[in-house]
Length: 427
Image 1 (tube, helix red, strand yellow):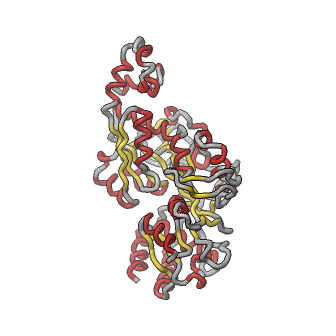
Image 2: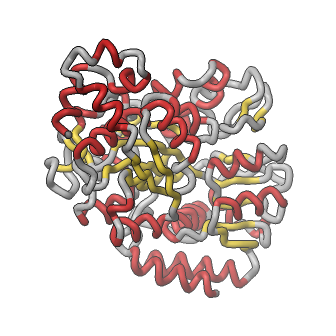
Image 3: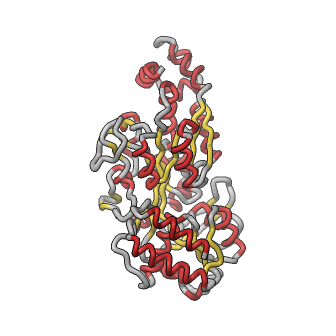
């Protein structure tokens, strides 16, 4: 069946076949497109990952466009690693954050994806494919995508040091994170990560309870405040981690943190209620607060952003016509619809070209070009988030990604980090 799928790729667009109009003409080839169209209807791909990128709307649109079912399954970060370790056959498309590939790829649970089968590879952001942005090398502190995307060969589970014809994952969504604030309640301008731990916000600050991310926010804050220094925030030593957790415990015992939030909804509720005025935050959560008519800003800071990115991997048990369908899905994912959808929750698509084409002039100017909105801006579900005249927090796509200071990561001392983070939780 795999051979049949490859032949059809060369003869006719499957998507056109599935839309029906080309079936009659195509059937003159060998009669096989009808077989494909009939068979593909029985395919179901399970796409599993975190809540911020695994969205039911994406699955529904993919099914509409491709003709086979996409089942979206949400887990948390540890949940994805556990599923891939203990039940990998329950997942077909693994939606992983870049640092998670450091755990998954060596386990040999992912296909080596052939770059030649990714139709728009040349249009995908060089943040992933070249390790550059706007012609300049991006930060290598932390788990920069370029370190983990390539593998030496199709059947070699590892990481290549330079570009090859095979990748561990196809770039998908990415962003640059910062602090969320309530500008109407902070009482003064917020300009630095140091403000997260400022006494001005005692009892009104929160930090995310995801150790790999929370520790990054803490290190950015302590370094910006001049309290601690790090040789490499992307890979701190035990001594540096111990000192950081020690400072966090001091702050917690002193009543600085109103909460350590663990879920997306918790972060929204803390900010919307005004119980917290400055905290670690994800872009869609800021959007969700804004849709309630509450002022909430994803605040640019002088020290720069914490970058992150996701990739879509094909789990190694997927074969035959299902593997063909998986490639179809990866190509569809970066063809425009997803890029336009996720832009409205503040994320960027790995294919900015098709994402921008899927947006209106007003949306494109606001989300990518740093221009004032010419009309109201809405969320993916149609709720107003910004008014005409507003400019996106952080400015243009170029401004934001030229200031990534460090990437989310799985540090060498991760086991030590988790143990110390538990101490912080229990304090």
